[in-house]
Length: 450
Image (cartoon, rainbow, N blue to C red):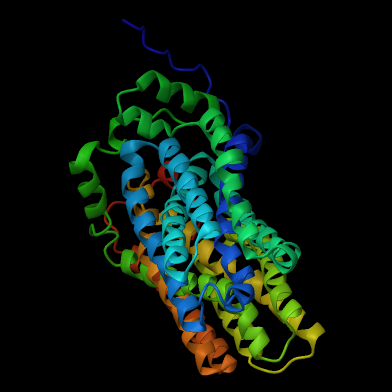
């Protein structure tokens, strides 16, 4: 019989240095997530120009929606199962899924099999995001959780820039298929590192009866040791209880408002990521300039994550998300005009600063609303239900492009951003009715204040 692990005399202080390897692994995984999502938009002009594939604007929008429908299923499934099966197995499985999906796209002879590959990729892409967010929310230093979330999400936009660079450098001379072959790299690079170095959640280990391992991880990273009240309940009954907690008296109003905000944010993220090059080309810009706009908006997204994270740790994620949504609406409205190329680049960059981090701050606010045992499920459902926006975004963009009205597309994005601002603004009002208060200890890993 193994002797119980004694309590540490003085638990180490949780710091960025202590948890840096965990955040770095999540950063790498989400980098490949962002690369795979944005590869589709980066090679869209080449897909439409390939007569063998049989893509039209409408078909391309439908395939984009298949991807995001897969993300919806992946997010709901992973967010609900991660407390039961563990973070590491689901992170690994998610990466493998979107790597295999990318390989299927690379060899697809027609639009149907290409769409099947994108759907498979979507399952993995959707599953990875809520798990990565839950890991960072759990391991980050309490007063820097929103910043840590923002830092991790810079990787999504770095991946988007890498995808755009691949589209510009590889697709014109070697064809779009080689760009999708690059999407197999996550299985080769990230999976071995995750398997070796990513720690499991102390709460999950404790719930599985692996008490000594749970205490060891908690002591190593400066956590309070998990207790039964905070451990997720195992089995199917536990999964149903976690879902039911989303509609408990203190969260039943906040949950649908977070879903609406996530819907709006993800419609913007995936609508813009998929269709920005074609919208700009329809506005009169050249093909190369139109694709470059995708890199520019992702560069703005990287800066926005850092600014939003630091600002949210000071003023609250809800306030920052609401303001960022409003500024996104302004940027989208400005893009309706036929701007000079240099001015258009500036507007797109600044819009990227607000657009992507508005959605990420919805996640940071979500992490505060739910207690530790509910957090992964809450994040999974906010990202999962929000994926309906990601399904609608690419389809809507395809419909607008098919109608030849780029201005209508930018107007639609602006109205969606206003919807997101209204929904997230109402979340603090909903939380006032919460009967079970969030203690400082519970709120610490959550990611936002306010």
